[in-house]
Image (cartoon, rainbow, N blue to C red; front, side, top):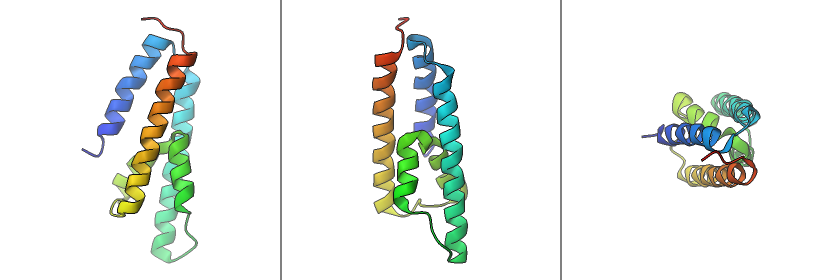
Length: 115
């Protein structure tokens, strides 16, 4: 079930959009950050293959924490990158949980309740 977090996030994002009048800019920010994160993973995967300079794990984790985790998750699955490294995976999952908690808190704080 590697895509379960994405499915749950999409459902909650739809709920937040309806219930709290989430502005479209939030979705755009997640999209841009996710694309950036996906590209960072792809560049790191390419660098790993050619033994070139690698993207620091902290950078990948920071991009995920900033909202790019959907792109990071897709990159991990589609590119088969960073999926077997347990020390990275638990940190990645922590950044996803922190981002989601922040998303919920900010959505409730700044959204206009419609429910």
